[in-house]
Length: 103
Image 1 (tube, helix red, strand yellow):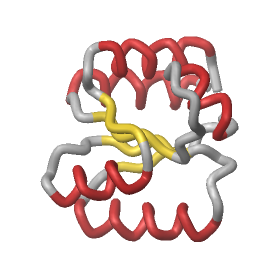
Image 2 (tube, rainbow, N blue to C red):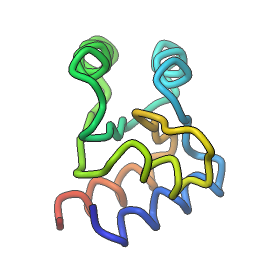
Image 3 (spheres, rainbow, N blue to C red):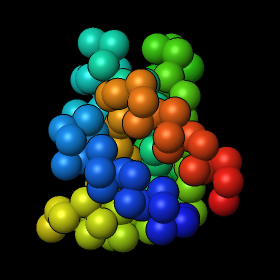
């Protein structure tokens, strides 16, 4: 994953526009708050399937950049390793998607 993409996710987190963790993201998707799901490439197949099904059901775009679970947690300043983050802002969603396409 590019440094710019990591930076954009960090900025979204500081702006309060990220939801971190599988269960929290699933709950937020059900409420229509998540616009983009970023899933670690290292997430388990079961987790990826669960998230993919939720994304299809709720109409949320999902990307899986090449990032380790531990790295995702570290770059967001967390002591745990989340498998995914949900972006809740339209502008951050566009920016993250553009940066993901560029890599």
